[in-house]
Image 1: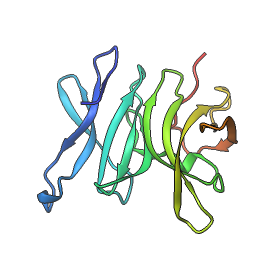
Image 2: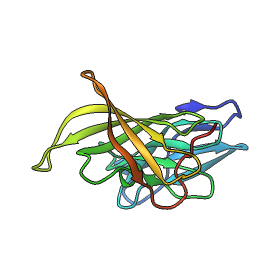
Image 3: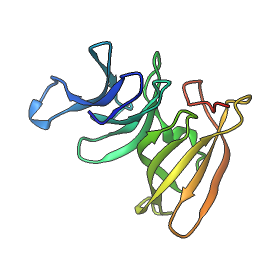
Length: 169
């Protein structure tokens, strides 16, 4: 278990039987009404882990290769795990590796790495994903929380689908 909200929902991870159990496969889970629900993984990844959730039941965490966090995700009831890298614009220079927490406005604190022009991952950076105007519901701002400054890296990135967090008044 990693986080519990006011409604009593709990998120974390659990090991599930799969081929090659010696690899310790685990998936992000949510405990709801006394039952463990497997949230799955980002397509192509072997493991996932949930770290935070808000009062709306939106869950965040990471999905990866069981040794490293590779994709920050958000999940909502009735949906599938969404790789948050798909909601930031290409060319931002960031790879979101782990979503640490989400507040009730849908703002997500995430870890990222800066991807160099050669495709190598460089220094880590915290970012804040802030949903845009609720009326639009189709964009997210990415704020860098680097020690040097706080700046908007990519305003109004288009978001596919409707499973992403929306801002509340």
